[in-house]
Length: 269
Image (tube, rainbow, N blue to C red; front, side, top):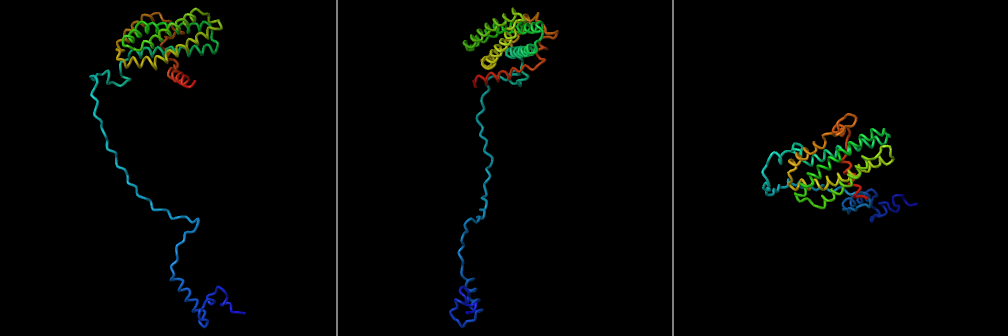
């Protein structure tokens, strides 16, 4: 049997000089293997070394480009430079207060109708609502709408408002002549409230902004409207001994939320 040192694959099997000692052949082979450069081979699946991060240049502050200032369009006064909350109340503010007040009263009536309140209590509140609406429509038709026409607000917009007033007056007459014991009495008041809410939305979203932009003297207009309103409200009734203004402020009117709901339902039928 051959020596194990001369088996296939051993250093001794590749010796050219068979007389060379095994240890010498093994040492020479190891020396030659160390001097031979090996090619770097990438193993499949091995993770590559992360690339060095590239330094990014930080952008400096952008230069401020200032446009030419606009020349003033009018002389600065306390009225046109004061914050909105400090400006003098005008005619639009007066009408808005009425809208909030009547909205709160309609909300109170809805609660009375829901809990089946006594007929006399519902009648008193319904008469208060109708009285406020009659005064409101009167100052609009006598003072505000004519001033808006004079300021060249769209005639079609004002014509629609007049027609809506006529329809509201018809509903008001039905409520005032109706019997609270009638099954349709509460329904008439509810329909009147919905109709008024629709009218209020159109005024706030279309008419009032145009009146403000038209340059109307709304402050002076308010004084005339307030004087006429005082005449019409001289004998205004109260609900349960509470003045109408206090009764209206007792609850949140929610007129802004009603405006939003009306616009949303109109855009998303």
